[in-house]
Structures are given as structure tokens and as C-alpha cells.
Amino acid sequence: MSKAEYDAFLAGCPSRQLLDRITDKWVTLVLAALRSDGSHRFGADCAGDPRPRRYSELFRTLPGVSQKMLTQTLRALERDGMVTRTVEPTVPVTVTYELTDLGFSLHETIRGLKAWAEAHMGDVLASRAAYDSRVS
Image (cartoon, rainbow, N blue to C red; front, side, top):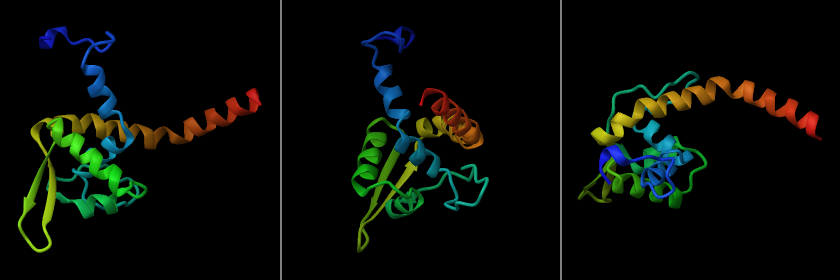
């Protein structure tokens, strides 16, 4: 398919697979973490300068992710051209991940989505409670 022919509303369009990938919770958080300064202070917006991050740094930045899921997510992002993986022959081996230009181009959207979720979570929780009280 040519670029002009991609239409995610069509069942067979490969852009659906890409949408599935980039809307995954861990993909979103990994891409955001690769621009983060690593702090978790209130109001942190992942606007730091892009820099390589070690696997262990990413793992600590993302509480709740398993090593298996982080590894799978990073491999998928590498395959899709969003991150590069660099192995340094140290003892022990040092592995770092960094946004590519393609990954960086997606970062603003991801950052906005993360900020929206954080800003509107109270509204969503209130809506859920109101709905649950009507339906129950």
C-alpha cells in the first residue's frame, strides 16, 4: 500500500497494528520515560531532554511492569523503529535505549495523552461513580 492508501478504518490496513502498539499502556509509558528526567515529582511532564536510559533505569521508573513485559515492549519498539538499543561491552554488559527520530516525533502526542489522563482522572472517577450508582 502506498502512504496515501493507509486507512485505519479498513479492517486489513496495517496502520491498525501500529495503533494497537502505540496505544498500549506500557508503550506509552516507556516512550514518555525516555524523555523524562526520571523523577516522579507531582506535575512532572516528561519534558526532559531525550537521553539514553539503561534498562534498569526504565524498570525503576515504571513500577508495576514486569521484566518480561518491559523486555517485550522495548523489543517491539525497536522493531518498529521507535527506539534504538545499544550494547556496551562492559562487565556486566550495559544496555541502553534511546528514542529515534521516529520515536521522538511520537513523543509530543504521547506526552499530551499522559497529561490529559492525569488532568481528567478526577472527572472520570466521578463519572464512573455516578454511572455505577445509577446502574447498580
